[in-house]
Image (cartoon, rainbow, N blue to C red; front, side):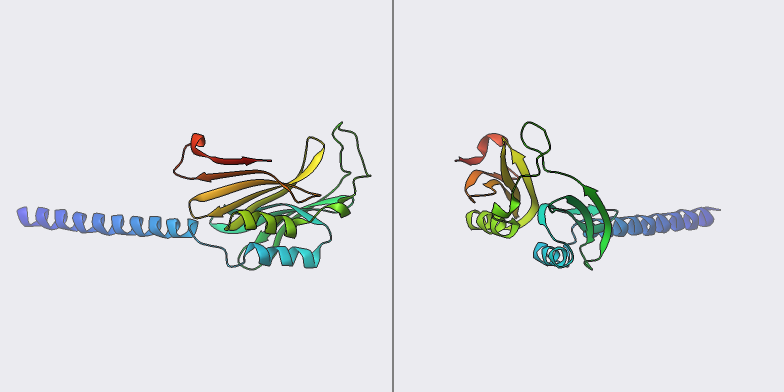
Length: 193
């Protein structure tokens, strides 16, 4: 009887160890998926979008859902806004939402007289940000702020992150905020124009 009990306890111990091993390998695989880098860069995705659509990219973000890496891109032209989800591995457009619109002025009334042809463009805005802080552009948006259009850009380099507001017409850096993941908000380097 003692031999049977010893064999049973040994078998349970081995099966528990194997189960824990599988669980840990599943967790390691899941962690590896979450740290996976996209095959296509933001520049690759920008090229894909510019080949298929006319307009200015106003928002650009890398996102992970259910272990799938994709870019979320917003693009506007004179009367339409496109919300796109693009596979970061293949460049395939997973989702496309098109909405008709008119630009609004600061009083909130519709204004179709906003001339975006005077804007420096998303490529130039990114270049200006990267001249100030080298890294990878992870978010990009064209926004109206106090009656003025600005590019809001987030650039990351390791554990450092820089947020920019760049005037959409002049290209002047209106605001630059640099943070390190380990720092408190009180330790930010801040530049206001």
